[in-house]
Image 1 (cartoon, helix red, strand yellow):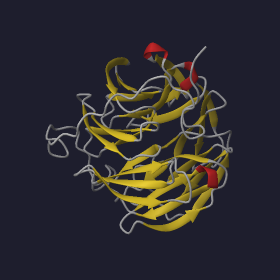
Image 2 (cartoon, helix red, strand yellow):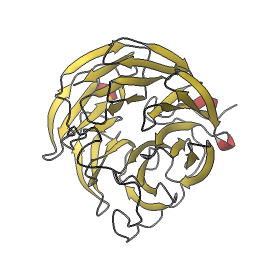
Image 3 (cartoon, one colour):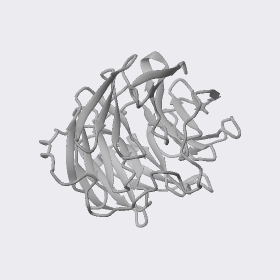
Length: 343
């Protein structure tokens, strides 16, 4: 019998088995590290449009089965995980309807598109694998079994598309070569890693530990832990600003943590209306959208003033939040059975 449960479906995992190792001491090397990675354009996306943010207008709520994880492309094409239906649902801002379903595995929670949008990866948590979806055919074409019977929580593809990061229900993050689908490394982080965020330098990835109260900074190419930040509480989803200066952490203890990445210090703790889970920072670095599941709210904060700019009463139980690359579209997955699009 598997000793596990759904990570984050009610905030965090309910039963885990590993212990958190001692956090490594912070390093004194320059930030970002000098070893070159894949440098992303932090001023504007490849299409030439300046990064922006939605106006806060609720465009539509598409009725779906219970939606948990979500990923959205610039064209509005959207995948969301149906955690109770063993698959991934399809919708779009173009159709504003439920457009399909892809069977994947038991308790799918995390989902992410490859940079070209042609492949998607989904964590089939209770099946103990990550599904690989061919977007064109809308089929799961293979799975990646997780070593040692671990349950995968969330996934993130590196900006160059070569590596897939998979968190698990202990302290291990696995790294997979996306071409061969073979494991090439593993990293020890805090307990119950439940979210990733990627730095715009294309080299650093951040991992929040829901039960560890920490965020770990990892070199995506070497698999080395560089720094560990202690935020306390129950850190959940995260987002890095496009200029690479700040990391924002949605904390289920009821606040939004701001980490200044140059120093590694928590430089702001912004009170929220309740325990936070999902977060998205708009590509123009102007706003953070923070989901408050137990209040049915998404709070929008101005990141310069740290003041509340707007509250979206989306209702239900909002979970993961995603933005398209340019930032015209925001999407909120809701466990009460809908996806909300914001423009």
